[in-house]
Length: 356
Image 1 (cartoon, one colour):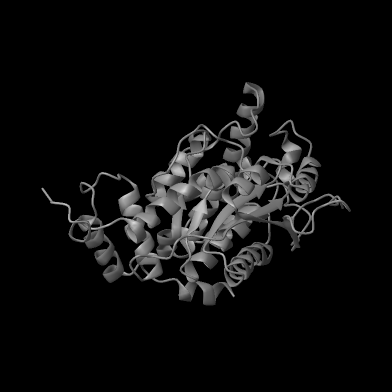
Image 2 (tube, rainbow, N blue to C red):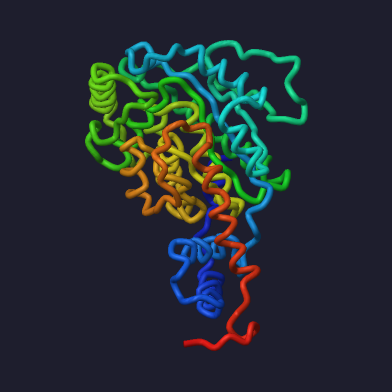
C-alpha cells in the first residue's frame, strides 16, 4: 500500500495554477490585496488540477492516538492513562476539538493506532457523533532512549493505517482532511523527528509540551539528544526515522498526509505533532508538500523549524499548543475563503468596474 500511494503522488498542475493566477488578476480587487490567500488558492488549484478548485467542504478531522515508552523517562507530569481517558472525552463530544468541529461543521474520527491502556466504553455516547476506528498496531511504543521505538514493520503498519483512513474519509465525501493527535508524551518523539529531519539542535526542536517545569524540560531535551545519539536516524530513510524515534500517531499522520496527496485532496496541518509527521511524509514524497496547508503556528518551537523546512507559512498564529486538531479547525474558514474567492468574486469585465 505504501509504495502504490507514493507512486500516485504527483507534482501540482502547472496549467491549473497559471489559470488561477490569471483569474486572481482579473477579480475586482487590487492584485495581491488578499495576501497569503491568493497563493494558497493557486496552490489548491494546482492540487485539484482545475481552476477554480473544489470548495473544501465536508471537512474531516482524523485524531490518531498512541502512547509512548519514553513516558518512563519523566518527560511529562501527566499519567499515561490520560490518553485513553481523552479518547473517551472525544467520543462523548466534550473536548475542545469537538466544540471547534461543531462550529466548523466538521466530522471527527478517532483512530486508536497505539493506545497502551484499555479504552473506556461510554454507552451514552451519541452514535451520530465521533466514531472510533480500532487499528492498534501495538500498545504504545518502546522507550526510544533504550531501543528503537518501533520495528520497521510496525512503523509501516502505522503509516498504512493513516493512508487507509485518508482513503476511507475521501471515499465518504471529505473534501479536506484535518490532522488531529492525542498521546501523553508525544511532543518528545515529535522533537526527535524534527531534529532528525531538519538538522536543528534538539534544544531548538524541543518545547514544553503540556507546560512542564524547567527541570522536566531540561530532562526532555536530554532525552531527545540521547535518542538521536543512540539511533543516528538517517533523514533519507523516513521509515527508519519513524521506527527509531517516532510514535505510532506520528507515523499514521504521515500516512494520512500521503494518502491525501495521492487523492489530490488538501490536508490541513495542526500543530507540532502534525508538522513533525509532515516532515516524514515529505521525505517519503517531496511532492506531498503540495497537498499540505499549515493551519497555525504552534507555540512549540520545533513547529516553526519544521514549517521552515517544509516551506510552509501558517495561516494563523494564536499561541496554541493543545493539539487534537484545534488549530487546524480554526484555520479551516481561511482555507474555504481563499477558494470561495475564485468561485464567487466578479471580474472587472463582468462587474463593469474600471481597472487602474
